[in-house]
Image 1: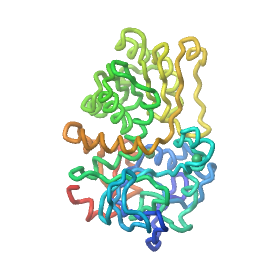
Image 2 (image 1 turned 90 degrees about the vertical axis):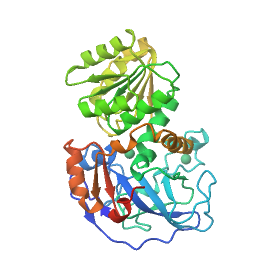
Image 3 (image 1 turned 180 degrees about the horizontal axis):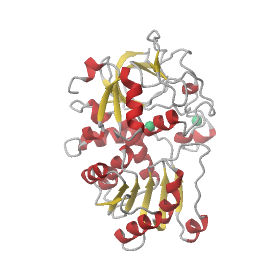
Image 4 (image 1 turned 30 degrees about the vertical axis):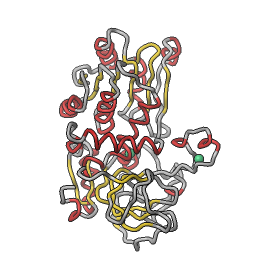
Amino acid sequence: MAVFHGIKQPFTFLSYPIPDPAPGAVVLKMRLANICGSDLHYWRGDADLVGRGFEMPYALGHEGVGEVFRLGAGVSTDSAGQPVREGDRVVFRYFDPCGRCAVCLRDHPYACPYRQRERLRGVRHWPHFRGTFAQYYYLYPGHTMFRVPEGLTDASVAGVNCALTQVISGLDRAQLRPGESVAIQGAGGLGLYAAAIARSRGAGPIIAIDGISSRLELARAFGADETVDITQADTPEARVQAVRDLTGGLGADVTLELVGHPGVVAEGVYMTAPGGRFVEIGNINVGWAGSFDPSDAVLRSVTLIGVAHYRARDLAAALAFVARESGRLPFDEMLASRFDLTDINDAFVQQDAGHVTRSALAPHPETSAQPT
Ligand SMILES: [Zn+2]
Ligand SMILES: [Zn+2]
């Protein structure tokens, strides 16, 4: 497995025996693992994992698709009750709400304070395989996983368990309604999915904002009606004005922040319509401070919604969405490049430099060379 040692340090490779799953657990063989924006934040040092209690060296990576390698005693189905066998491909939740704390009991499992408790631990502790940048991945008892329908490529489902489900969770919590306008700050993986989900909910106009023209083009393919190129609208004021112009002067009913930089929060709030909702997903970097004038949100009654993680049902919805739309939407094109896991350091450098949008790491190159 590839092992993370700290900010900007190269990954190294360690070997551990494949764990025997405990009763209720599952060991997956990873097929494809994406480098998500948050992995880049950790590697760059935007977010300090050590400061947050993660023990180094650490098994990084959470987004991807695997296949069942070994089922623990008592596991014979996925979380929807479909039978699973060794070799079946699955998508999985990479965190585990406890289901019995005060937060879970209030029906906010995505905010359960214990949801990553097991994953804080360093690689040296059994079962070692806590991250997806590895040949295997351990699903703890109480896990959530869903079998991938036949006929979908690995590439089309590798982004389901983080990026896609995250925006489904966000738009669900914003209660996006048909006919409402949506502004999407950042047309990376999450932004493209957001355009697709907003479109499927009957929203419009859907406005994607980014500075890379190929991303904006792809955003249109995924459902954006309009795009704002920040190399042209190169000030916050110009971008706010552009969104207002495209929405009859009011601003977007729902704005999604998917850039992950505190500098874009103010304009995101300002480009939201009176009575609208500003959904903050991208800024996961503890200690980064953004500033905006809160009176703008108060006087225009803009609701601020912070969204991390998701419910199990959101993951099921995300997989069903890809299954239904895979013939129509270019999911495979989201993964710009594929690297063997052994080239992980190169993949991080390239993605950090902006040369590739979302890389996929193949832990078993011989498996992922196959079409599905
Ligand atoms: Zn992620
Ligand atoms: Zn809980």
